[in-house]
Length: 327
Image 1 (tube, rainbow, N blue to C red):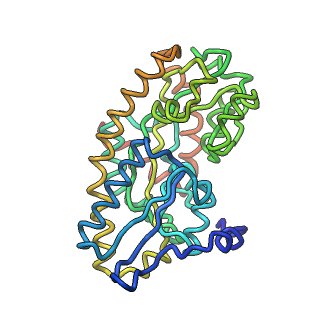
Image 2: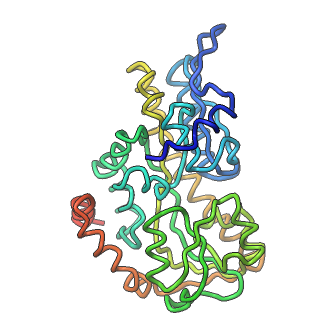
């Protein structure tokens, strides 16, 4: 449970993240995340906030703080744990250190198709994972589509799994992501998202892995000229609310928030599909070499991770359920 080091940050912010405007009797929840306002996931959260206002008739509002204004993913999660922040959006991979069941969402090639992924995330399995963070003061509201993650590199194209060997690849602070790069013979290097552009520019890492909109909107294509569409993972983003803040809400207010989260899903996914196509078109126009590969080769090289997780008593049940669901 990562609660250390957050009190100082919370005090420095001098913010009350769940407040009430006495003049208008409007209750406010603050939502912080690290994405730009152009990102399709941010746009999904804007719709979520609008729906909260609509559902509540203006009695409850969500104020959004993008671009890492209130801290990194880990810092925002820690602020949620002490109730100093209301809601955040993080990668499901960032939740692994808090709620272990999230690890299954980062297993390479765990999904048979996009429809299979949505069935899992929107159904009982997804709800089980979202609820698993409650004992760590982190309640999941919903999963947002964050597409498939693929490799991009500075000086050497990745065409086969063997090409990863010897490369320093930036990864999220995720046990599963670290395992995947190591399994392929590379060196995983955890670096905060906001520091990655400079790390790529200075050659601290040879490459990274992410989805097309993040590759484009971060301008990482300015330093990495090769984008290999191996689509090794489809790690979703997750909208998380502090249980401390959640418990302060009335039952009716909770319904307003949860209903808004569900309503934002199809809207966010539409934004995502549009942005993914636009991003790929834009990086191609910028001169980036897009490399299509045989994903079965990458799946074969990383299948050991799935087998190891099947031996984990906390995860084997979830994996079994996922494998039984038809694509």
